[in-house]
Image 1 (cartoon, rainbow, N blue to C red):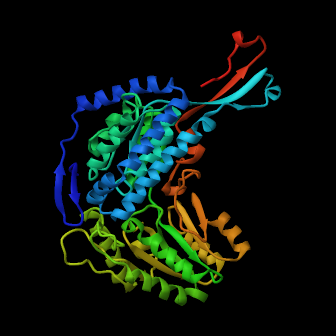
Image 2 (cartoon, rainbow, N blue to C red):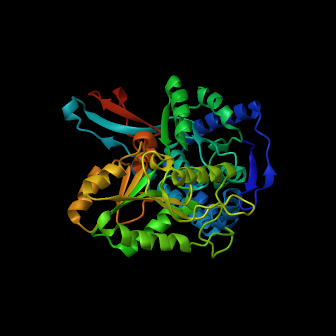
Length: 470
């Protein structure tokens, strides 16, 4: 895939970039290694000042970087501005809380025969981040903010269709005051990832992307004995039970399916509805989906813009076509519009069966599958009936069902009576083929830390370890 900005609303190539040659890649890795030496010795309070400055830059340049994101991958301008604002919030969250997250944790010294025992969190080194195009700012910041605050450095290999966003990110933290090499962008294709990850100076990797990409990164890192965090695909269920507030559930379902033009790993994709309310919910839901305005993503009145790539649009169309040819029914949408660019309308499909691709595959576009179930147990069976396990929604006002869904839905997060989303305060990640490891919260910061046990016996500080003051 060429490294280029191609406007998905028109199919027009706006800018192209040469791939970074190998000597510049090596220089960037060396800079990240040197930067790590400097950053790990910098007090957390100083890192926090720099991270707060990065947040200020995100706020000050929000409109400009939002326009770039909209041009490169087609999300609405309003959504792009909200993404930049969320990134600033995350930067401030880690600036405010990193010192607490990284503080030594005392252990029971007497139980282990020590004068003093503790757990210490220390950075591990340069981390390679392989990031996708769908949230081109947020996916990077949610890794970079905690990683840099922990004292690690970052090397970004971004998706090839968002190079301008990638270059802006590559300069952000240096402009905020972080030392040279703390964070850099590598404009390279996927074929260069293995060489970068096998470099001994690169200590770990994180990837948000497809299941095949995750398997590839995990295999390379496994051979090299390097830590990885993987956030892969999802086919999240949205379960609606008889006691649900159907108006509110249908409203949230529409947003949950079509946010970011339907291109979100944690978007609700499979709508599992109890038979007692199936007709009432589906009528509300289909009406709302059909009413969404598809158009120019820079227009404030637009709800859904184009899909990011021609290949992605064609894949969504093929999945829907396969379902219809095998007996599924279209309740709205389903036709590729005859216009330049990579458009696909909000679509609802029902009467799905396991013979259809949509049953088990993630659909990365504004397409919803409706499933009718007759009981709680069947709802859980269908909801858990894919290889994924990223997020899940359940809609019920029954307290017992709420508790049961929280336990029984096999996912990294379960949201009851609300839309699945990510917060800096809560861990984020999946199970099964949706990946492993966690981002965000204190847990996300510690994923790329050496969790070090410190045991000090008798003999005073001169014979052991002194206090940790940073």
